[in-house]
Amino acid sequence: MSTDLWLVVGLGNPGPGYAANRHNVGQMVVAELANRMRATFTSHKANAVVAEGRLVPGGPRFVLAKANTYMNVSGGPVNALMKYYDVAPDHVIVVHDELDIPFDTVKLKAGGGHGGHNGLRDIIGASGSADFIRVRVGIGRPPGRQQAADFVLQNFSSTERETLPNLIVDAADAVELIASEGLTAAQLKVHTAPPA
View 1 (cartoon, rainbow, N blue to C red):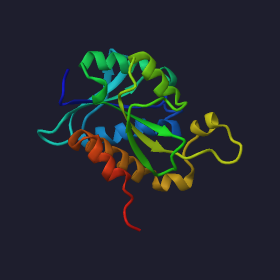
View 2: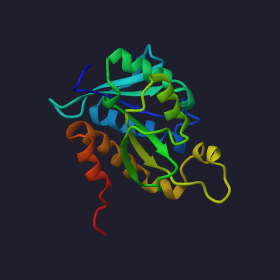
View 3: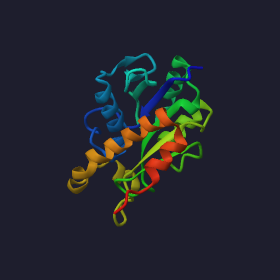
């Protein structure tokens, strides 16, 4: 197993029609990381696109990945990438949208259940492990009686879009912190609210 390599998967749905949806915020975060690395996504036989590189010279190596499948069947590509790059679950970071966290909030955790998130459910089922790290990007609950499935497949509101670039940067920073300082140190920094 490679110990300086991190597989970072941004969950979402493929194609331009979904690109700006709330459900695709994970892919937005890995795109931000690829920009930082000045890396380009290329096709991989695992039915995904990947970008490889380091964020700092001599730092950890990253494989950034976006599955070519719909989110609820992303487990196959993620499991194939884990095997191809020989990455253990504790060096896999899955970046995903989270309804149970307020918008503009990032939370980090390792392991646990899928919490009703079909992308996580499929990754756990395909890989046989829930021990990967999650960067949970808060999108908040749908307003009124709107169904969650409809809410996540809508684009961010105009008000949210004003803050969204900062949220994406915060989540990308969290990925960097996990790889460079470890999950516990990253949680302390990310979960501690700055003074008002």
